[in-house]
Image (cartoon, rainbow, N blue to C red; front, side):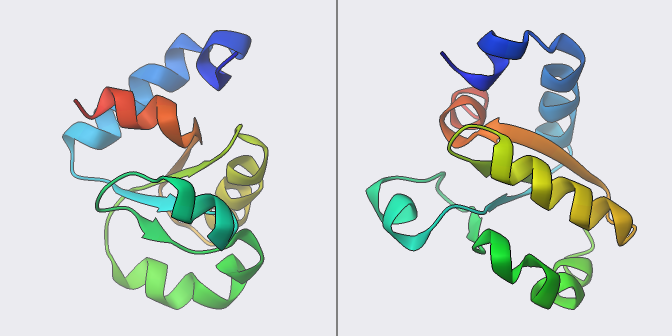
Length: 103
């Protein structure tokens, strides 16, 4: 079951849609092997453990951020890290769910 379906978080879904409409950047925090199997076109790949090292680069994007992964766990961790750094971020959960919202 997808992240949205499992948690049924309508507010988060609406927030993700709003971010997408406002040209947010999607950052995928999965491992390279997972990314290579499939990802959102135009998204940025930064493995979760590298997020703390990439804060300056992410801030320099000067955009809202949607973080995605396989299920929402790693993207949740990334969202908390980025939020603590003052970055406007939302946990997008599973990348496939966000990809569906982009069509």
